[in-house]
Amino acid sequence: MENEFDKIAEGKEEWKEVIKEFYTPFQETVEKVEKELEHVKLEEEVSDVQCEKCGRMMVIKYGRYGKFLACPGYPECKNAKPFVETIDVPCPKCGAKVQIRKTKKKRNYYICENNPKSCDYISWNKPKKGEKYVESDDKPENEEKKKTVRKKKTNTKKKASEKK
Image (cartoon, rainbow, N blue to C red; front, side):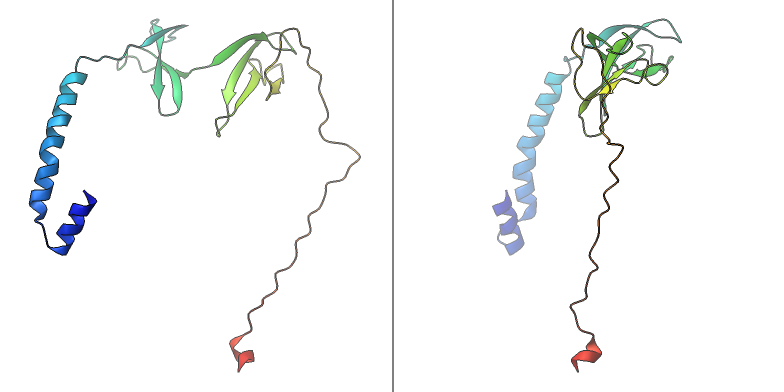
């Protein structure tokens, strides 16, 4: 195709003919695929969460930022919530459910469902069954913050008046 565009640019071929040769089989392929896809229907996964507004069981849908819960009664009921994944290991601090969340860079972290109300458990590492949480001090108290010293930039270019 690129070679044919080059020939058009050089004036050796007519652009209408090149487009016609490409577009006719392309259009037939698109129409064929559209007919085949008409019978395909996406199944919605029903969750065990009930809609607070209308009482229907919410469904899991896929959006731009991943999974979310939505009411199947859309457009009458426009209720939607975030989809929260939990693990079967209880929180090491308070015993509640632990949720899996993602950072902006798609990295998983684990947080207690009661955070920040009554529990402050949050970790990069998946908790293990029977594990008790031990808070560690990552910041030494007696060590001062290290100051970074930046070197001043020196201008290596001579001014125009100095060159003359």
